Amino acid sequence: MLGISYPSTGRRVARSDLFGRIESAPTQADLALYRAKDEGRNQYCFHTDDLDREMRERVAIANDVRHALESDELELCYQPQVELATGKIVGMEALIRWNHPTRGLLKLGDFLPVVEKTPLIVMLGHWVLDHACEQMHAWRGAKIAPQIVAINLSVGQLRTGDEFVGAIIQTLTKWGLAPMDLELACGRQVSCGCRQSMPESR
Image 1: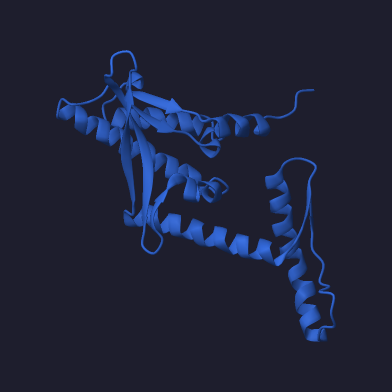
Image 2 (image 1 turned 90 degrees about the vertical axis):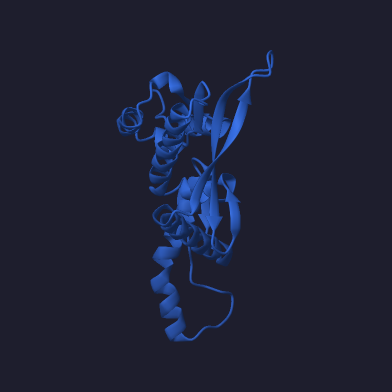
């Protein structure tokens, strides 16, 4: 991967402004490099003003998610899983929602692409796991529990390996649940991401 930045704007600039552009070039090249990595193997990317704006937006969203985790702005909604043959509800799928103070109610897809590229994805995954298991525990106490509660996994969680497995075991124990009570759902994008992250066979 290659990130490229250059200080020329196609017009004459003051010497002091030119020095500022030269000094910022390494950072801009880094941004371009990150974009090239996002695009996959053997890619290159030029730095642009649009890339600057995109990266500022990413930083803003990541900071907001960190605040949301600390300020109880997140919530889980539950979607029934129905057995087609009988029409019976056999499980509940946990879906995260974010009550953003200025953007309103956001679905996971509105912020997952940004969060997946930061360590916050692991914190967010732990939050979902803990709250979903807590709800299953409450349903059990009220004798209205479904057979399973399902949560969706991200590439970032799976990449933590043993840490991820340990978090599941610890959370299930915390809420008195068995492994069969929890369903871990991997979407197509997660499977593709895992294949891309695997080292090439030799």
